[in-house]
Amino acid sequence: MLGYLIGFDEEFYEQTQGLLLEFGMDLNNMAACKDVFEANFDSACYHDNHYHSVDFGNATVKDFVSRWADLIEAAAARHDLSAEIQPALHIMRSGNPDWLVYRRAFTSLDETLGYMRRFVAVSQDNPQFINASQTADQLFKEASITSKSLAS
Image (cartoon, rainbow, N blue to C red):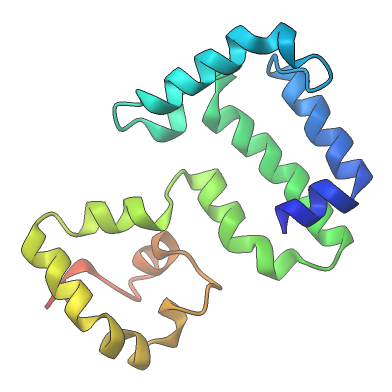
């Protein structure tokens, strides 16, 4: 969806370009932003498990992604894609992608293996786990799932 919005929604593209410029990245003069891009790359590589708070331009990933999520939400509404984009917006705003939620929930290899062994059966009984309408973070917060229910 983001590729579609960037490629075919000129307003979204221009707003995204403007937002990047506010964060110190000029897509029309990338050579001048070399130091910023290298610093962003280094922050991403050496994040020390602080994914949402790493430097991004003249602020943090969280600052950028929160504002970009607002632009995405408005563009998705213009194209009747609001429902489909909600899980991505939740992840962007919360900083809790599914892999990180599961990593926090399963603190041992045995728990992770238990989850992997039970995944098919659990997802057959709980289709919301795999229909992509909610994130793992949302499912855990609603108590639809717990690490123990998935791992045992």
